[in-house]
Length: 150
Image 1 (cartoon, one colour):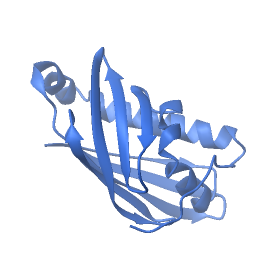
Image 2 (cartoon, one colour):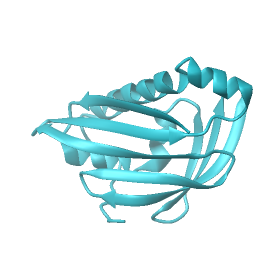
Image 3 (cartoon, rainbow, N blue to C red):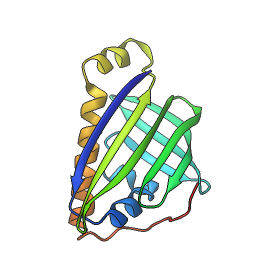
Image 4 (tube, rainbow, N blue to C red):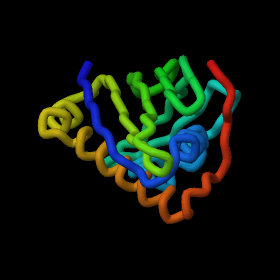
């Protein structure tokens, strides 16, 4: 398994950043390569991704969710193996540090080489940058929220 860890500061309160992150179906708006996410239950999502022409479908389950603190997940079925956690750290009333840690299993020669060249790390950093832009351009207003605990 390979690992990546990235973080970004966003100019919104921790509650806003967390609430937006729980809106999985909006991920394609700021995550490159994510074509569609379907929320099937409170804890189960179905993902369709297409990265460098390779399309994959998989299911992921939320394994832990604590409002304003963390969302953890793992894949449970399909064409990808990964697990991770996103944590939210209050910097002050209007700023939050969002940290993503993920483990994943590259498949095949192309993904292994891309992993060694830092492709996934750059992808995650870019996705977090687009998340920052997405939530800040909305004036700090999230598209929704799910405040349940897992």
